[in-house]
Image (tube, rainbow, N blue to C red):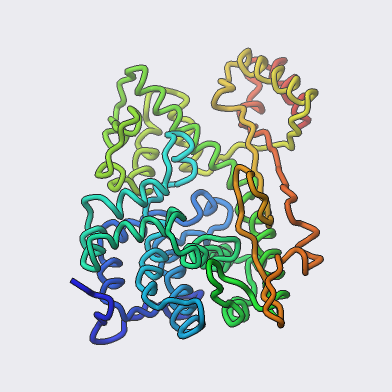
Length: 433
């Protein structure tokens, strides 16, 4: 049954601290929001462990997803409407893809994916295409409609203009999370003139372009993103919490493989530990479940699992020093690993190198592993030029990847000199603490 023009009898709104209001007139969107798979996103934080550093960062994937939807709604209903190259028949597809783009994120998503070799984008597509409430709602628009939504999110949909609205170097996803994350963390870095950017966006065949008069607003956006990554997303204290979180999951998985008798059986994890997680099991997981296990595992007999869980729950985090992975530093790491073992501290769980890396902007380089669609400016004469060719600021940072390495360790265990005093003293000398 064709649903494209089916509207609610009255517009619904969500009060939002970033966009003021999220407007919903389409019944299909309203019904998607009500599904259990979308409501699950209320129980998954947008910023993972960042709340241990910035105490306001408790916002969820749910309100971010609504924010991305609202930005897309404004672009296609206000800016693109009746412009050349824009097909209004793609409107509902765009709105659904924007709303559902993060549907497959798991609890503490990136750590969870790393440990268990999962991919949230694959789960997003599985939820959209599987036996779910979301799929049932989408199929009202047509049997092929869920497949189209999944293709937009997977960046394989034939209309690349639609894809670029959801996923590019200046897309609705980034424009929402930068402002939202800045708001909830209380920092000023992520703010940029989104109103100006929206006003100068134009549809052009297979991509969104920016009127050249809006170049400085785009420069501001790119610099905001750069600052947010290094001041918020890669904050070393948040990364410490993430290191501990990752090690808890590794330890629990290892104990399960060793047939350890858990006092509280990790029944929610069984299929994940064994590498055959079902969609039903995955959807049941959220951060309240994870934190429940961390809470009760504090009382486990295994000293490592118990200690790591206590550290995470009570925010007794690892300290860190700068680490440059040169030959000399790697030799020092090998020596530290040996000394940790002699001190009775398992280096597999308590001596961790963590690296963060970001590329603030890049232009298209054919054949590279991760090809990037560049931001294009539309000049007054209609010509299209790649952003870094016009902007000295963007040119200065284009293609320049910045990487940061930290070595994490539990300083409190080294301060306890009742045992292995000489060894711990040598460790502290090597760490220069």
